[in-house]
Amino acid sequence: MRNKDIIEAIEKAKHVVVISHVNPDADSLSSASAVYTYMLKLHKKVSFFCASKHIDENLKFLPWLDKIKNSFPKDADLAISLDCGSYSRLGVELDIDLINIDHHQSNDNYGKYNVVDADAISTTQVLYDFFKANEIDINHKMATALYAGLIDDSSNFLSHKTDHRVFEMAKDLCHLGADSKSCNLFVSQHMSLSAYRIKGAMMLDMQLYNDGKIAVLHVDQKMMQKYGAKANDCEAALEEALHLPTVKVAILLRENKNLTLKASLRSDMSIDVNGIARHFGGGGHPHAAGFTLPDNDMQKATQEIITLLKESI
Image (cartoon, rainbow, N blue to C red; front, side, top):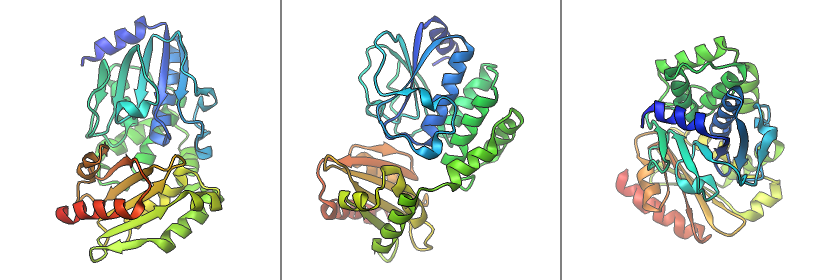
C-alpha cells in the first residue's frame, strides 16, 4: 500500500477514530496517542476509542488518554487501528474504511490500508518510520508517546530486536522533545502494590517442566481477587520467568471473568511461540504470542501446550 493513498484517505476524512486494542499496553496506547496528536495538527475531528474500560494507571501520563471513550462514534468515516495484531483485537465491528498500523507477525492485513512491518520492534517504530517517510513533523507530545512505546516493547532496549535503528530513533525522539524521564519512570519502574503481591504469589507457585526448559504460571480469578490485581499486573512475573538460566519458554495461563483462559507465551527466541499460538487460533511474534481458550481447565491447557512445545524443543 502506497503511503500516498493513506495520506489522501486521512485528508479526505471528516471524522477520524484512533483505536487502541482491547486490554491496551503501552505500545498500543502510545501509538494511538501519537496519531491523535497528528490528527489535531491537521485540524481533524478525531476520537480516541478503546473497548476496554480499564487503562493502566501508569500510562495515564501519555498525552490525550483522558480523551479515551468506550463507545464508537456513529458519524466517523475513517478508523486507524494501532498495534492490533488481528481484527478481533479492535473490540468493535467496523463499516468504515480502516488504516491498520502494526508490527505483529500474525497480522493478516485486515485493513483497507495497511502499514505493517513485522521486523519493527514496536508499532511506535512503524509509526515513526511512516512519519519520517512522509515528512510529517513530530512535536514533543508525539515524541513522548513514540518513545514510551519503544522502551516498553524493547524491554528497555534489552530485546533481541534492539539494533542501531532503535537507538537512532530513541536519540531523535529525545532531540524532538520526548519526556524520556517520565517514560522511564511510569513505563518501566512504577508498579502497583497489587502487581508486587501477585508477582510474588505467581513466582512461588511457578512450575517447571522438561528439565527446567518450560516455566508455567497459573492465575485464577480467586487469586486475582485476593490481591486486587488486573490483567496487566501479571505480566512482570511472566517476563521475569525467562531470566532463569534453563528456561526457554514461559507460559502464563490466566482465568478471565467469563471463565475463559488467556494464554500468554514468551520465549528466548530459540522456540517460535507464534507457531504454538497459531495452533490455538491466536498469534503474535516468534518471541511473544498469545491466544484465548474457551474453557478454564488449566491443567488440560498446560498439558496440551507442553506437548506441542516438547516437539519444538
